[in-house]
Length: 160
Image 1 (cartoon, rainbow, N blue to C red):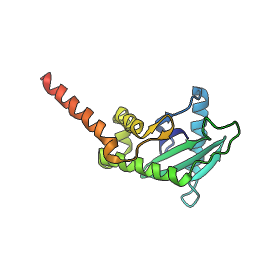
Image 2: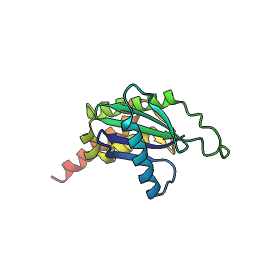
Image 3: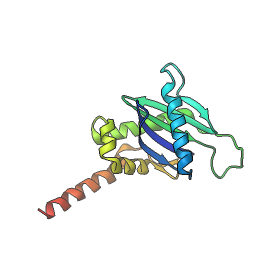
Image 4: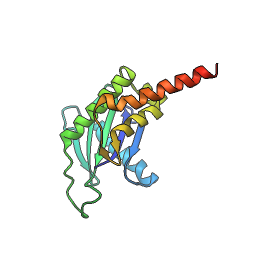
């Protein structure tokens, strides 16, 4: 199960964070800064997986952004259960997310995320629900975004 997803620039500034389990704000801040520091300090020759504080952290760098996914054992499993989340599957999910964002915004960059944060969250919500990946088909993910954009253009035209 996905516990959190972070999009971070090369300077370590969080551009998007989405949590799928409750974590207090103080703990989120500490966890984010520690994980970001660990991921950014690793070289490109090192593995993209690491374990930290009971989380399996999978990350990938695309251009100037790091996409970081943290997974934990399923909530319904017994206490102390092993995290059997597939790391390569999570890397594939990150790749699908980036490809979907590229198709939506052209070539995705940090500014697209900053200025269209609500749409990016909506896109992510179409792909992940309650920490589980529910959709990876780009067309199915982008259809609701396209409909929302068309309706907003109609509404803008009505008030002119």
